[in-house]
Length: 571
Ligand code: ADP
Ligand code: MG
Image 1 (cartoon, rainbow, N blue to C red):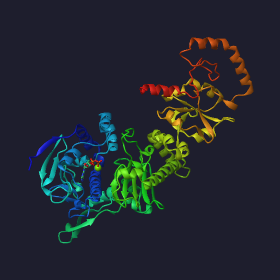
Image 2 (image 1 turned 30 degrees about the vertical axis):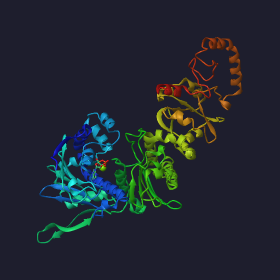
Image 3 (image 1 turned 90 degrees about the horizontal axis):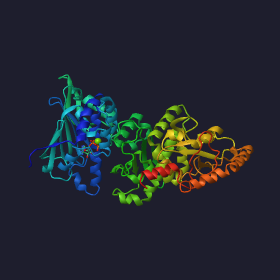
Image 4 (image 1 turned 180 degrees about the horizontal axis):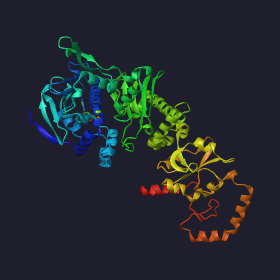
């Protein structure tokens, strides 16, 4: 048996520990939810691995979580018989943070404790939250399938380091003991622990058990019995009927599946029957994760087959442009031993993806088009959604041809109409304000709102009172190459080609323009000659009212903005 080893935490863990203990103190009971959530994940993982290797269950097939406390020792213990950890697992998982974007996140912290406190909740603290109430944590764990003498004890006081040593552990799984800080004795009560479990962890699908208590008439106090009782409902939340689930339970379940700390914006919960049978419980988060632009990031959907957890982040279940959606899909048709490779080819998965895409778009439409009593609340939620995820949704215009029209209706833009950089004008809003005879939807693209707003291309439109959409997101140019028209009206750049204002120009103006063209013919010829290798053409323009000249792109050329972007990207 090896000696006890002491190892240092990853720098980010140290930062997290310091910050968390101070900033999350007002919400300290979340530690229990985090540790129970991990125990539940560990049981899911065991059940999944056991599909192909039933011996992992050893002689202990009933997965459960036990919570207990010891008043004398002032400890709380959360024990599971899930997958457990090997020594290497413990060193890695309880010494570092595996989340993508961790470095960037900690780079963003300001050092201002209050500001950082708000952010740390969003990051998610997981296992380390135990240190909010404990000044020492002891983890004893054995990975399923390893012999009893290859278990490990991990221990730390939550400062700079932790120790690991080999131990013998008969039962598989993990037991986590919190040695409570001075003053945290309120948690040494069955009543308190039960109430926290019911609030935060009721949705957990396996039983959470505690020792039963009974009133002793002689001693005049509660005494512990040798029996266990189940504290939570212990059935998969998504399998219950909607009417039995409270909004709080939906929110807590979201926090469990998403590892997010804030409540979601909205959810959709459905049992789908027919050729492919499945249940979906899908959420729209209120905030974008740090790694939303990480191309390797997978989706946020957990796949279950008949209540058995199969995998996290099953990216085939959602199109890439809906990668922000979190939740659970539980299929009745897929085989239990389904792999990522099989998922790619599966027709059931294709049906689920199409069905789920429609549900998500429906959920967004419900917010965007709300007109009932709660219209204001829903529209505010849509504005939040758009701010956080609008740029991602725009990818759908190019990626999902079948739903392009629906997505186009969900788009929101800044516009000359409301003179603000807020993106809150829909294409339908724009058309409802179109001038008599206006047959196009006009837009300008630029690097920033200020540049777009001050573009000389807008002058003639201002003069004529014609609204122009101001597009400044990186993805806009790309998106527009897939969006030629909306409800029969062409989308037209104000910066491209010979600007034809169609019926917006009257006869007198047209005649005057022709005369001016003739008048300036010589000058234009001279300028063309002087600019041969710089400009493709020189024309008299009527689109300007204040500026003397502007650059335009040819109808089929890259726009100036896109050309600049490609150049910046080194292409
Ligand atoms: P997260 O749950 O978001 O991955 P945590 O900080 O809660 O982050 O946990 C870190 C990791 O530690 C988990 O991903 C898991 O690998 C491991 N772990 C924590 N608790 C347990 C447990 N009870 N059984 C097995 N592994 C665990
Ligand atoms: Mg966790």
